[in-house]
Length: 308
Image 1 (cartoon, rainbow, N blue to C red):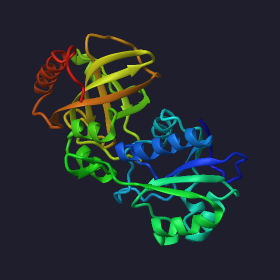
Image 2 (image 1 turned 90 degrees about the vertical axis):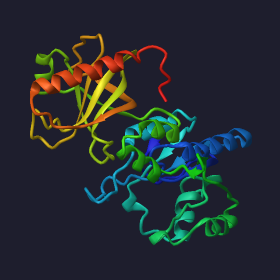
Image 3 (image 1 turned 180 degrees about the horizontal axis):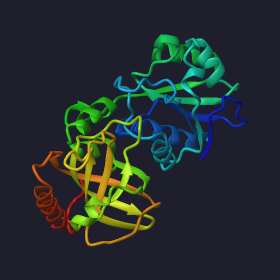
């Protein structure tokens, strides 16, 4: 997948999926797959237009994303998108609806023949335009607009907000159903305080990515991807209140029946099942006993467990 942050002309006609696509959930996947299908039918290039909010986000104001920009690109690439345009939000936020169509969707940039988006798509300065305006503005350019209805699950709309709320409550099984894939956190293993190793259950620690919604703090049964290998494990997401006062969130994973030296490796930790909330124990001994019980619970699920 070719990626660019520049708004520049393409020399090939495209079928473009437009949106922020935070999480790449089932609703987003419908939009993206529809663009890919149109591209195949009409001999177009399947493309995405999204934007980067990182420099516009105000920390702690509820604007965190579900997944990182890197994870978002990986998910989109896996759906067959060939061209990915993602400028900083500041470059498009002041464009009127008419300017957006003229500068972004026309031959001046995406050279779109087809645009696919959600029925709630808003664009233009202050979100001034919706689907009706999009179709009207695209008409003179010969661009066809195909809005997609929301995907429903259990009688409710699939949305990033719904997934964030479930994630904050530790309902990871619902999160995974709404996403259509297993929620995960990726990072490079760093050195911790080595206390867990001394307790008999060494861990691989990665920092939780900044700018993303933190799941319910606590213990999860997980699968961890290391290169081509996968390990079942037990993971604590949180600040480890029994042993440290550090408030930065850590994803601390014990790989069951494995003793791998993973420092410096990039690993991906997939969350399968919530076990218990994070808690502060009265003693280290109580912590160790509880972790051992959590490990045994996870070990019993190594075989034959449906991850979702």
